[in-house]
Length: 66
Length: 66
Image 1 (cartoon, helix red, strand yellow):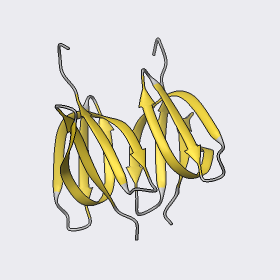
Image 2 (image 1 turned 90 degrees about the vertical axis):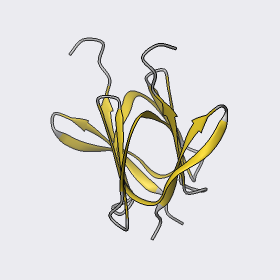
Image 3 (image 1 turned 180 degrees about the horizontal axis):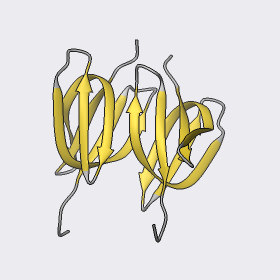
Image 4 (image 1 turned 30 degrees about the horizontal axis):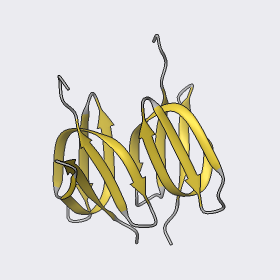
C-alpha cells in the first residue's frame, strides 16, 4: 500500500495532521482527509504540494485575509 | 513505489494527463506535475481529489468565468 501522511505548514514548519491517508477531497476551501483506519479530518486549507516519493501531502492553511 | 496517475475532469469524464507521478506542486492556480521519467506538465487547474488506494490524482480545470 502507499498511504501518505498529510502535513500542514504553520509558521514555516510542517505539522503532522493525519497519517495513512487513503483519500483527500478538496471542495470550497476545505480539505477532507480520510485514513485507512476511518479517521477523518476537515481543514480550511489548500493542497500545496504532493510528494509521492516521500509519501507526503503538504497543505497550507487558507485565510480570509492575508 | 507508489506513483499515481493524474486525471483531469472534462465534460464529466476523467482524461489521463500524466502517469507515474512523483511530484505535484500547486501555486497560483497552476498545477505542475513531474513524473518518474522527468516529464512535466503544467495545467491551469486545481486538485479536486486524491485517492491513494486507486493511485489517482483528480484535477479540475480552472476557468476565469464559469
